[in-house]
Image 1 (cartoon, rainbow over the protein chains, first blue to last red):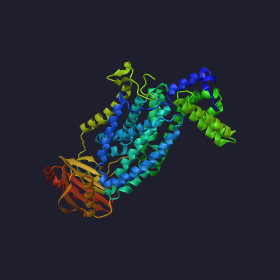
Image 2 (cartoon, chains in turn cyan, blue):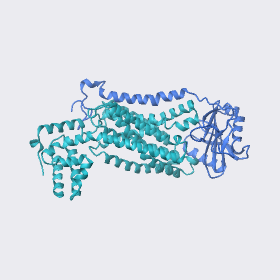
Image 3 (cartoon, rainbow over the protein chains, first blue to last red):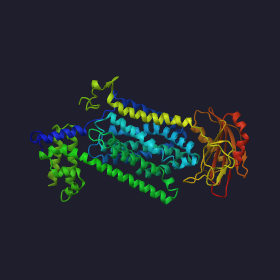
Image 4 (cartoon, rainbow over the protein chains, first blue to last red):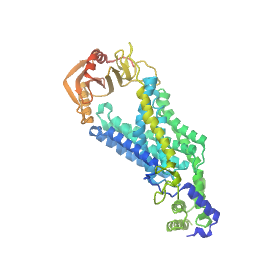
Length: 390
Length: 211
């Protein structure tokens, strides 16, 4: 089936589509190189500083610990690939350009970690030790440093990306997804750093063994770590700042930011809070992990209606012209409607049809609502799956 | 679209009303916020830290906990810059590396698991140090000699020199725990506190009770 939406579709639906495309900016590309944008130069400067710091840290270590560092890097590459795939999977409405999320990942890994956090963490922890004593500092310094230092330096990268791509970074969903990638970059490079430090344990007799044990622990604990904290923090920033696509909601934003910092602080202080009791440590870690994931789930739930509205408005003319049915659009955006739609025979083709409907949504956005050959091909795919499902 | 920072196929000219020195003023608030983050964490806080001196002098009766059951007695008046005193109450039992300084001399003991002899430990320390300070010309000086603590623990020690510092390294192995003892500083200053350093090394002991 093919349809020329421009002839048969009421003007108000086309107008709503145009507004949705303008507000969502779906389909737009990201240009990283922007010499007229101050954020571009600050990004380059701080990422460059991070690279210099990283090289300075590792250049002397490579000769003796090279094998261990390679093992840590190899493990972290696999780890990154797994999380990367999942974050792309949950970014289901209009995937952010790869160059944009890569910029976020690199900020988290190089600028946030090496140019800012290492220096700041060391200084804050040293101030704690000088002011409150070594014992107090050992107990609480991690939990009272990382949430403030690390969350703000990661969020700084998100602000730069808002300045570099103000049309692409404007919904809470954008904050969640891009924040997760910034956090992933931070997590992975920090894991390599921790792994390398562990290589020196036991006077460096068994560097690879030290890396393996530490990296394994970090991977397990990574389920509740920087990607989660940063996703919440950046979603909160979107609410606090407010954008064309997301009216300012300061209270909600501050709650998300506070949740991120609370989860980070409690996670890092679990041993001290439990006074070292094994079961209590596990209980606190589980509790704060569940808390973090529930808040993340709520944040996605709160973000979803905005994205659903974009999908409905962009695909509205397709329903009017008969390319899609309202049930199919409903099934695209709503989980319960999707379950109901997929019941019965032709389930596989129906699932494909829904995926094809999202493809059509992406193509309409990319081609600014024009009836291009690509959009016509997407419509033809839907017709093909409908025929198969019948 | 005019006035946006990004565009499908090219970067648009910055609208006149948004230009300042050729830059897009709309990027300034984001850039300024990031500069504030940088200023606070990379400049102000480290300077505040530098301005605060360690003021934690050892008093008579102090002992430092290197592990649950290995301790040493620091010299009175030396400043503790890292490490935990025996008996200090915190949320967690604390022990670990200790670092003290006095008059430009730094005295540090790092405990860690080690399965071998003191000679093997000091060889391992030298191997790692040599290969992780390439170009720094780390050199052992003089003959390796035996060090015995008051409690009878036997270790080995030797001098070293590098372009940046010089001093003495000693190694002990006590029931599977290696101790790397390092004293660094200007030669004259080390000589001035050599008796105190010797006393600290000789005070290393394994206690019967948990620290």
